[in-house]
Image (tube, rainbow, N blue to C red; front, side):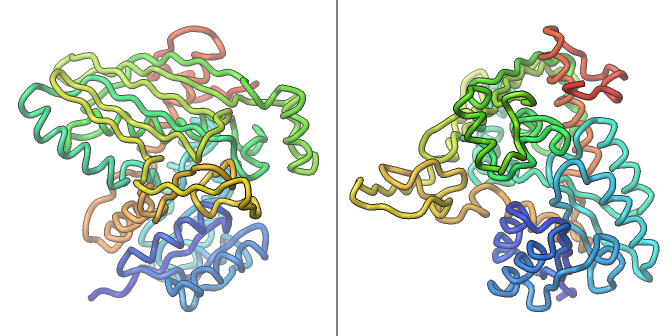
Length: 406
């Protein structure tokens, strides 16, 4: 058996903790350590890795550069806020130059950066470093979608022709950290934060298994953004109070709802469509997380909020607010879905298993930073379409300098 891949995480927050928990189902890897702007956050994430047995020697690092330079770290997972991605890649480059053995891989959480220009810079820095890359899009590794796509293409498309329409929606009541609500840090609102999932998932569903990404070409993007809830005075005030004045959506919002339609062309010239929607203004039992794939004589429906388990608590049962039943939980009473294993259900276990195998040389990465750049290209086209009220060609060179909200 090969030596395990020793992973260093940059960022010690919510998403890193999801990744660490998912590693319980991934062989041949350990958590080597965590670097974060907050020493407390880095130590807490390292302690989690130790406590569940996936990082017996995990430790907090004093800087991103130190983590990248350490010979006990083989690969890096970048899970820090969007505004820091270029700076982090620069620190990784500095650390990598001090190594005797090169890094085996660098992964980065979605979205790759705040703008297309930044995403291209992140990709360029990765090429300077010379390590293989991975774009962390968990949804295309979700077991329900993986299995549904395989069956539909094998039985439906092979008999009746390829699918032509994919829909994806992800909605919840809003993020759990202040930086998501601040456009200077996040780069945008719900479109950037969540539609990156939906657009990539819908494209992947429409792509024939085994075919390259460029077998589908996006030719038109049409989008609408709106503020439906969080700019209302009551809710803007709630946000401000929740985050100690750090968030001011009354005067400085992004968007809490987004919808986009992308027109694609196949290599044979057939027109396909993806319809995606994302929202921070949805209140219900957990998340709304749905997918559809439609073809001439078949269809696929996936509701990831339905994991087959529901619990009910009457008004006589009370408890602290939390997310111990499902991510983005909105209540602690009534009937609610329960996801038995969220890291596996949402695809984190599958994606980490894949990238560990890729960085150990067993397979090629299915998603790289280049793919993250292409997702960002579509997101910027969607922002421009909404802002200017027109359809946008995503191949337009000016998107490389486009910045939403300026």
